[in-house]
Length: 465
Image 1: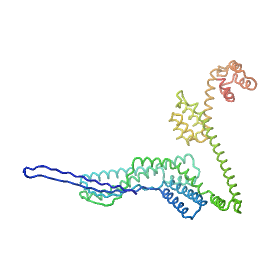
Image 2: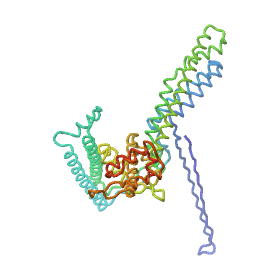
Image 3: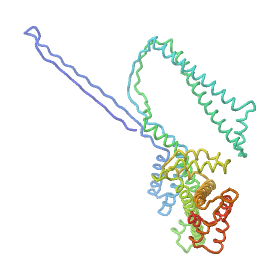
Image 4: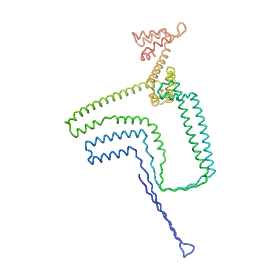
């Protein structure tokens, strides 16, 4: 706690003659004020614990209750406890009280006039009526969605028990949750409006009353500033990510087997390496080093696997982006719609589960935004999208190839001109099985030629194109 002392003094005087020449006018004025304000400086549980534990450890060492070998062991234990408490503090968002101020103060107030009070009550009544109507609408919509069989509660129980849900049930459950959320908000608004109206009508009888109060000690909590609100919003957005990291730290802290190591360190410091207990300690510590080395090796392998997966994801996106980008390196709306129209036809069930991510990709044009949305998709979905892209690219190559070789056959249909096919073979300079494969296209209809075309390698397809 700190305090601020404030004092002020002012004075004034006047000197002059009056109407009577024999008389003088003299006036003096003086005023003095004194005030003191005190405020608290809030500390978290971890800060208080740090201060106490470090001080007490130092105190025990100075008093000879612990020696040099025990001091670092106790400090390590304290550190582990501090990490655990800090983790719990972060998970519970640290219940830190707002600073309070204590000051001498006095105030006087006059009640509102009758007309002002009536206007306030009228506005409050309108708010109650509006919130009541909104509550009725929300309840009706939820009851309609819920049905006579209480479908929403049944689906919620099914989801909580981790039973499999169909796509229709998932959609139904989502609608139920939305309607329930609207209903709960409407109930809160109605309750708040009703309570305010009741308190206001209870005070209407004292509309013309006046009061005066004086308090020598008045605790005042500082109001939340705009920065405080921004901090709270940021905390709510990041709390899940922070919670996962802090949880992992706490688990590691509790799972440590340092006590045996601490015992061995103390044995080495007190009795050296030739004591009967020293050899078991050496064996234990060597085994621990080998175990931790193996654990570290597995972590490195895991990180390398993650890096490889990220590299493969970047390759998949590169194929996708190469197809959808325009000359300004922005996403082409036409190409995007073409891909996802084909994806919806080929994978209709999967498309519905990722429709939100797909819409986000469609709305964006910047590469980095689309890449982030692409990365949110499951790996099988990414692979399916790349397959669609490859098929569309092959189809475009074939369409250009077909325009070159197509000719009217004897029966009036279009087929591959044998002479043009032969010219392409000679131009490419191919032989063997590849030559025979391309020769099969001669005089074939478009469908048969396409089936042969897709069996060729991408390099040959581009050369034929």
